[in-house]
Image 1 (cartoon, rainbow, N blue to C red):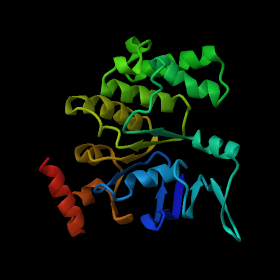
Image 2 (cartoon, rainbow, N blue to C red):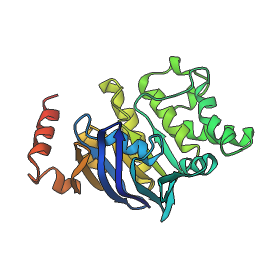
Image 3 (cartoon, rainbow, N blue to C red):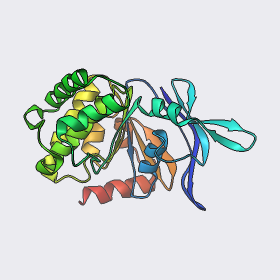
Image 4 (cartoon, rainbow, N blue to C red):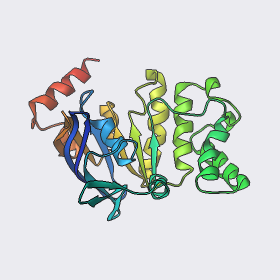
Length: 252
């Protein structure tokens, strides 16, 4: 469903993602793990075009998106075409990114109304159903500063789902939460997995990755070090760097 070919991302002369190639099948759950600075978040942001590529290409169901090749390098698609593609990929951030002046319901309605042109009555009904799905129907009229971190993140998931995405991208969705609130968000993500949603998840939640992932991809220094199913990832000693990473996490 999603194909990455030789993805590169530089900030000035600093390489952050170094020629990553990856295939994500429809309905697959892939967890990106690795130390801070390994390129997980940057790679996700490239997939959703929040970061401009320095090289390589991204295909969505076989169609090259965001850029075409030209004799002068990468040629960016039009803003309207990019917006159409991005609407097919829901994104959930570690810091929620909710509109503070809007209620939970308004946050979830905003995208379908403004981007997809959905009528407000239809968008409201869809938003209420999604808030019900994530266990927040009774909080629909609350503003973000009236919600806990776990509740904010569940609203953010509902907001992404309101766009009816074909895949969901999660960038460390529990890293900003108190430990007792993490389970609220992971429970919703498990339900999405059970519903067959394609997901790419950058996470440090190793038990969650072991449970839900079809594949775990270990990144270090902007490169893929290992790509394997959980049964292999947690048992085999394929990488000294990976083993060190897992040991450090276990001490937290």
